Length: 131
Image (cartoon, rainbow, N blue to C red; front, side, top):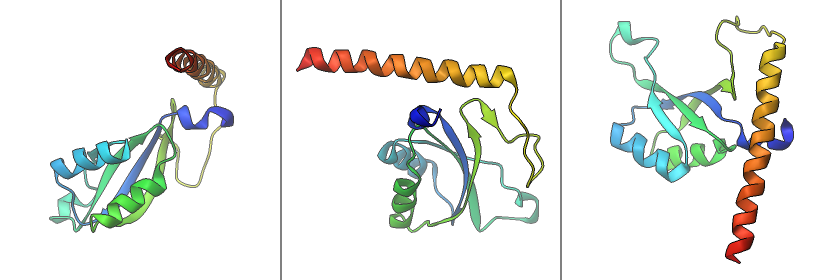
């Protein structure tokens, strides 16, 4: 699985200083190569939040790239939490705890790994034909 880590979709909740507009989210997403969307703010009931949370989905480890782009936009990252990796999520797991993955989940990750490897081989064949 670690060999194909870059091909697993990773999902993060990112808290940034200030608020990004929808055009900013789209532009940054294209620039960095990630999908970004606003998450319902935990403190929304107490009025307007000063710093907002966003959900970021990425295939490759682009955390540092994302941090640099956000700092350049005057919205530095304050907190970053991974909430999903491939088909696995932290949903339903109490903070500071863990659980063992089930056989079905391990098989799904194995299928993904094999599928990703096959996809790369096909892409490499296409690239060789172009050269």
